[in-house]
Image (cartoon, rainbow, N blue to C red; front, side, top):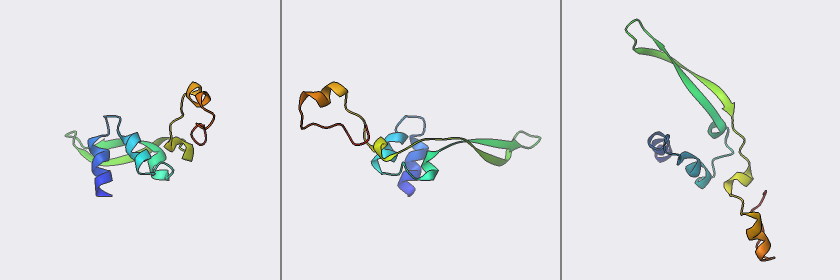
Length: 87
């Protein structure tokens, strides 16, 4: 859990977070579906004294999202090469 938390902090703006969630099979858990914002209350000097976390939206993540779809042309080359599940 600590490694996951650290990677979330370190890679939050580098577009690797989604890949980690898929790799660890955590995408269907509710806490990983929520997109939130944090609003800080500040005192007279402008220092944060409290914060409120607000849910902006809930992402859709199904089992099929653990796999990316193959291009349709690739699946038609060979009969024994099926599309990934759900796509």
